[in-house]
Every structure is written in structure tokens, then in C-alpha cells.
Image (cartoon, rainbow, N blue to C red):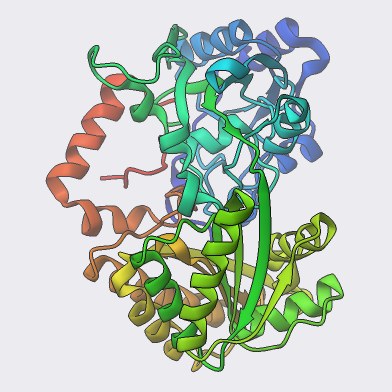
Length: 470
């Protein structure tokens, strides 16, 4: 794959002695080794590695502030790094600089079960948090699939399979501890459930992808573990019938916790990868949370709606191990898809549209992809109008990359024309920057750029992301 053109010309020179200063301050927690830099200079995007000049492994907010002050003083790029699971080139060091690894900041600072909140350091992962709070009877529901860090999830405004019921990180982050570009440490809010006191700084930093500040602590909402949980799968003869069922379920107000879509190719890949025997046709995967009676009522309504749309073979997975197997398989759909073309490189994209336009958008997208020269899969968190396309490309074939980019452009423009967004979950990173003006308008984009300049006048924080270079 070709790197963005800007990566060829904007790499900044590191001042003499700067790396030595970092080595003196952090010792073995600073590295310029090629293997370490390469690990921190690539993610799950199709872009080739773009390496930082060095990597700092921070353990405290104060250390992050120290690094930020020094980078700001010398105008050295600084890129926060969580677990590297992003999909759109978010963490690539396109201008060089320092990768700031926050994975060692992995302590659960406080759990206030009586208030349904927890405060964690940025490197705590969602699975780690849920393991540590299991005995409280609470859980954190945001589940993007990858075992991402909570700091990274806040920075990218992540969502996932539970978003249709519990919302995204936008709704579930109450407060942040943030290090600014010049090394100040701020807290964006307290733990009160609501506030009218001034600008909502929390929402400004949630989704900013490390371009406005470095998140070091996150205070999030927790929820009671459901009394009853049930999962089910239902197959359809056509993609359109499956998506139409979802539209009607949501419009009926059925409070499903999860409703996921997989096209035929995704089901086939999942069967092979996860050793399942799902029927290989378009499929919906549901999960219901609530009281036993409530779960039963939800499931009956959903079963009636899917049957009216030609749904077949409604199957239940009520035992925890059966549900776990199904959801693990769904979360592994990305890796399963890669096995459809061994040795390939995946280009992934996502869009989100109003639920009323979902069937139209998915159907038109699938029709175009059917004519592509490479295999693909479609999966989606369709309960909130969000779906993902995985295009499996020959990394040595630039024509396939160009074809995939043309398909991505048409998909994004289709979503925007339907009053949707270029990304409902992946974030902007590098891959979606060119669509920002079409989605938001030039004036709004200029205002975002002004905000970036105000927060980060030396442009050191993850530079070259979100806002297109003028």
C-alpha cells in the first residue's frame, strides 16, 4: 500500500541531544530500537509502518506532562499509544517524533459502586476493568471487539456491539484527566451526573484522537449486570430482509442490547475460523438483557418481526458458554475474514446512517462490492445504523488498493448523502480525513482547525490527523 503523500515530506528533524535527554530521564523505559519503534509505528490499517524516532513508556500522569513539556519546547511530535488496535492510521508517526506508550498506566484508581462509576488510568483495558469489578455486580458495557484501552476508547469515541442499548464512549465518559500540549494537567469535570458549569471540556477531548490533549485517566459509568441474558441467531435469504428486520425492531422500540449483522461471506469465514456450523446466509445475532420476563417479551417480539421478513431457523443460546462462543466468533470476524485470502492485507471502512436508510445503504454497497476484483465481507452494529466493510487486498497489487479506495469513496459519499457520517466507529485518523469537509462543511472544519491551534499551537499532538493539511 502507498503511504499518504504528506508522510514523505513532513517528517520533522529531532533536535540534537533531545533523545539523550529522554534516555537520561527514563532509562530503560525509553527506546530507539528499530523493533520497538516499528511496533509503535503501525496499527491494523493498510498503511505501511511509519516509525517514531523513539518510544517512552510512561507510568504516571506527571511523566506524561514532563514529556509533553519537553516535546512542546522543541516542537517534537508526540503520539499517544494504547494497544495499537486502531484501524485508520491513527497512531502512525507520519512526522516522526515520540510515541508515548500508556499501556503501563494500567491501574483501576477507584470504583464507586454506589454511584455506578469507576476511575481508571488510560492503559486499563475493558476486559481488565470488567474482571476487576465483577464482584460488585456491575459491568462496563462498551465493547468495540478488540481488548482496547479505556484511554484509547475515549480518544476515538469508541462504541461497539452494545451501543444500541448502552450508547458509546461519548455517553459513558463522565470526566477525564488530560495533559495539555504544554504539559498542564487538567480534570475536565467531577463525578456529578450532570453539570451546567461552563464549556463541556470532556466532550471536546472524547473523540479528539490525541490531537488536543493526552488522556491519562478516565472516569466512566458502570451498569448493573443484567438479571437475565439471552442470545439468538436468525438467518435470512437476502441481505435486505435481514436489515429491514433490524429497522422494524428499532422502530418498535424493542430494547435489544445487541443486534449484529453478518453477510454470507462473513458467516462462511467465521464458521471456518471459529469451528462453528452456522447456516451460511445473511445472519442477525441478537442479545437481550433484563428481567426473565422482560427478556422473554423482547425475544418474542423480535421473533415475530424477523418471521414476517422471512427470517429462518431462529436459534437460542441461553447458556453462558454458548453465548460466549457466539460473541467471541463475532468479535473474531475481522481475523476470520483475513483467512478468506491468506497473505492478504485488509482495508477496512465503516459508515453510519440514519436507521431508516440502512437497508438502502447496505444493499447498494453490497451490489457494488459484488463487482469488485477481490473478496469482501460486511458486518455491522446495525442496531444504530453502523456497518463495516472488510476488503481483502493483494498487498503487491496497487490496482486493487486503488479499486478499494474508489469503492470506499463511493460508500462514504453515499452515507453522507443519506445524512450519515464517514465513520460511526473507526474514527478519522488518516484514512477518513479527506471526507471531513464534505461531511461538516468548510466553515465547521475551519473552526475545528482553530480549536486545534488554540489547544496545540506548536502542532505536536498526533500531528497530521483529523484536520486535512491546507
